[in-house]
Image (cartoon, rainbow, N blue to C red; front, side):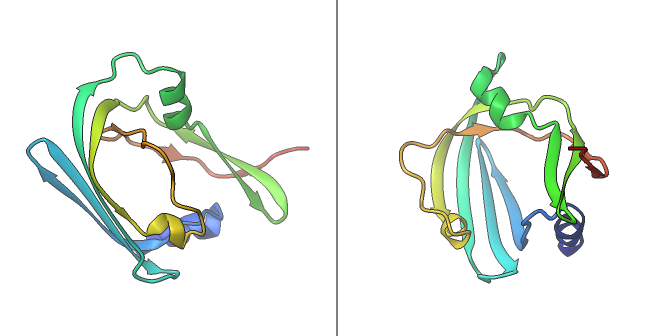
Length: 137
């Protein structure tokens, strides 16, 4: 959807990209595909498939650090701005990575990751982002 990308780029200055995305569900597996449309490089794509496993009943500090985002910081008119982010804790599951074909990380100018990936799955939560306000220095 183009509108959320334009709003995120204009209001929060987030580097969101307009992409064609899809979720593919089959018994025991969830797949995701994304192909960038705008801005370039147009056509950069990613595809991955995971097998969700057992629920993580008591997430540790790493899981909390990676998934608990309660605020968004950005720069607006050369000043630091903050927007509150509200969501319940993510219901996390262990997961196995079955397939990964990625062009999006190098398209963003980053080197390909090395080492074994840390893989988790969540069916998702509703997230609300408040209006940004300037941070006093």
